[in-house]
Image (cartoon, rainbow, N blue to C red):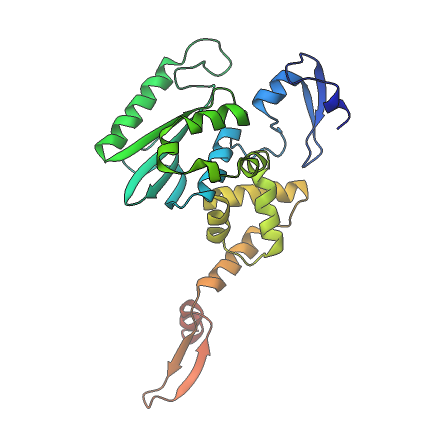
Length: 265
């Protein structure tokens, strides 16, 4: 905190950083890059960019339906949209265009990413064919002010009253580790299914499993795959009652599978 009062956001001074979640030291980074790119830990990173987390937090505050992140229907594979939502009977995709790709620079290169721009146009055309409106937000500078300004000058501002949005909450959510949040949810209720946890945090079930495995390695939770499968099966199983020909109850079994196995032994 004291260093933050002495160094400006445009400073080229190199900083020794440490992950606030897992404590892992990070290679030195200049203050200007930290302020524009944010912090990403090589040890516990969730792999979701600041702009994408920002957009998810925004959609959580809006009265929209059928929200999906990393939306990839069969007609779009192997590509995906950052966000999909429905509002007043119409369908939309919300794309957060960062500094890599989208006609900007390539990864680890100063060259223009022409292929990325063509891919975006292809994805836009597929959406339009299916009467889905595409909204793209310029996030080439991944910080709050730049992204908020572009939201306020986009179609999102025509659809929603963005003056009511808690931008502070969006920024806080964008700087939190999804790995840590998923692990905390699992710690609070280990019996929650992957489906419920995935829906709560806007990720897939496979991602939930990946995060919980990583969190176990980091000591944030204790996740056992076999125990999770057992809990899931118990949560979806329905009890089965067996009667004789005179409709007298013989026994009750916790599931059809166990009923079949016991009765055929």
